[in-house]
Length: 217
Ligand SMILES: NC(=O)c1ccc[n+]([C@@H]2O[C@H](COP(=O)([O-])OP(=O)(O)OC[C@H]3O[C@@H](n4cnc5c(N)ncnc54)[C@H](OP(=O)(O)O)[C@@H]3O)[C@@H](O)[C@H]2O)c1
Image (cartoon, rainbow, N blue to C red; front, side):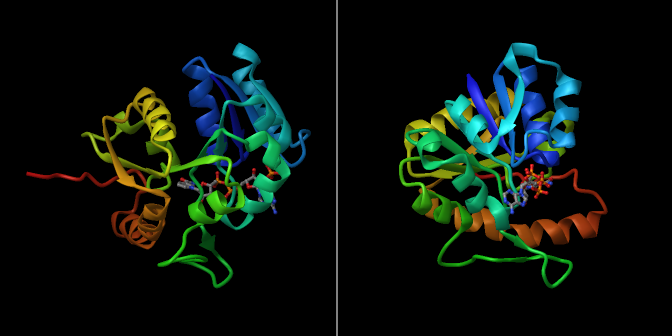
């Protein structure tokens, strides 16, 4: 599949690399295609299956499925640079967390309770099919869940059932076995509001390499 990754941070590059390994044609998007981090990524993966670096608009334009891996505070701006036209009708996987570091650590959330970043994105780009996922785990767990000693749980939230099924297929390819569809895009509120607990768990355990598992009778 042609996939556009918006974001050159650790998450964007890890997802992009994993997707290249899985045989997808990946375009990594950034504000400036000369961005040395993005160029270094390209040098590492090579141009296998058409891997490339471009602007946010070029990456989204290349794609059937777009991944938002930009800083939460900048996600709407980054998606506007990607362009409404390039997101129209596409699955838009949202991994971003609306973290506010302006008051130091730990970060707070810039949107909570009655709204979420995922909903803001869905409202801003009504013709995209937003699916929130992977924001509840560290980047290394995202792309290699099997490196944890047992199966753990990942969530998807979004309004479009077909889009969620497409994303679940990608998650299974990453190695996820326990995937829970928590409901419509408004259920992304809970996925984003899990972050303060995630931060506390990381501090308590001294590692980001963990996840939760939903067990039921
Ligand atoms: N790190 C993790 O383990 C983890 C886990 C779960 C979720 N997340 C979430 O995943 C997302 C990515 O995290 P990250 O640590 O990889 O990267 P990040 O540093 O949060 O974001 C980097 C990306 O944001 C873009 N960006 C920053 N300011 C911008 C602006 N004003 N306008 C447009 N774009 C802007 C950058 O564009 P340029 O390429 O042009 O510089 C870059 O591509 C975040 O929302 C984070 O909360 C992270």
